[in-house]
Image 1 (cartoon, rainbow, N blue to C red):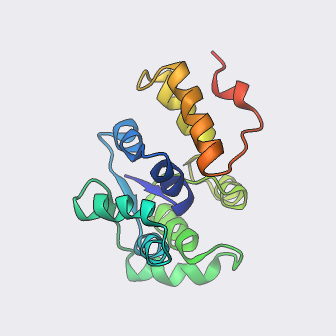
Image 2: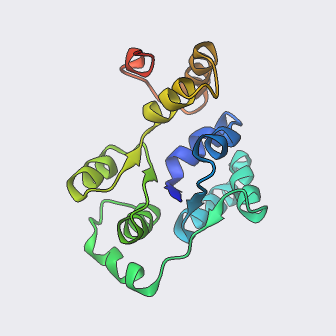
Image 3: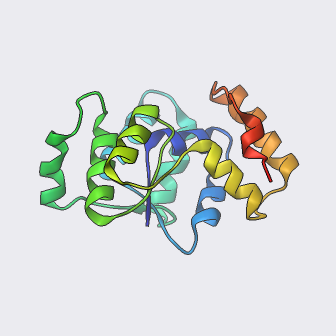
Length: 164
């Protein structure tokens, strides 16, 4: 199991490429905690209909809704308040169960590094898609352009994604 934070799923939803995450991490499952699921429901309710795809993939069983145990829920209070509810819930479950996470939040990545939680960020995911031959170098370049246009993310070190 690998747990996904809202930002990574949102990015891939905006470019209609959530299937790449499913393929990249198979046979492991991509999971999300209820707080992240709620963030997507709230986004759809606010008019961001592109996010509906994530909800549908959970309902179809393509993404697994990973419910925290009571002990994991209690641990949320020990995490920085600067993290949103989805990040706190994801981190508690990941730490408790030794699951890696998918996130592109700098603060979350730093917390993971300090606490020994493995993570994949957006450049790492794109690099893995290319290096593992799920997509070509040109397709990754196209994904980067789409992400920059649709999600307003700026890739500062694109060349690192393509290092041999």
